[in-house]
Image (cartoon, rainbow, N blue to C red; front, top):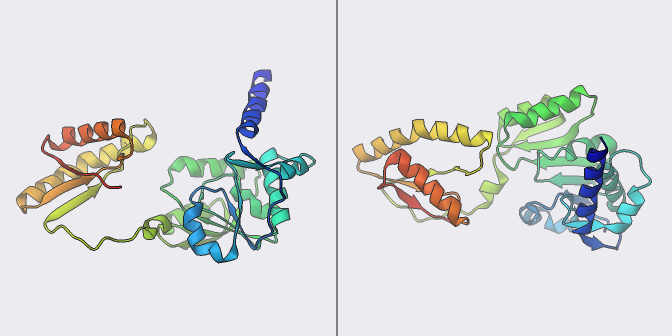
Length: 260
């Protein structure tokens, strides 16, 4: 128990020590972005409101807000976020990190402010298991608007979080401009291969072992090229492992497309 407390204190110390320190009060704004991750995409839609940003990963800490939050009950993270929100006075709080546990309870503590999350990626069952556990412990979870990839994820989120789910697809994917050039007679397969030993890796490799041989046979029978669009183009070591995996599955002559 003592070791756990010491480790927690050390974690908080390092979190603060290595953060950029800001000494001015946050700006007042109608829109607050919770978590700076992918804020550049959100800014394209929210720039006219000149949003303030609440950093939650230790990139930046507002010292005045931190000191003010020390006099509040509850977790330090929630107290800091609530103090920041009160000073900014936003009409709406937006995040691109739909699975951030801290965001799901903001609306319950700040009922006069709208909250909205935008789904950022695929969500595995563990996310919803954690939400179910929080609800069973009595946590009040609410997000006014949940912008999800589709109805299935919206339905799943709605089991545990109060709010209105809207299916909108992927904002990040739609943000990428389509190229007009087409290579006729070419089939492409987008790789999600990852070197990490997580639950998704075994799932993807199981699916690949079923789908890709059929695609390869179809390409051969119909005189088409099958190209794998590789994922790890920025990491040479993982890139070589990714190529080796697909060659083991489809043969050494497999063609790859390295996209940026």
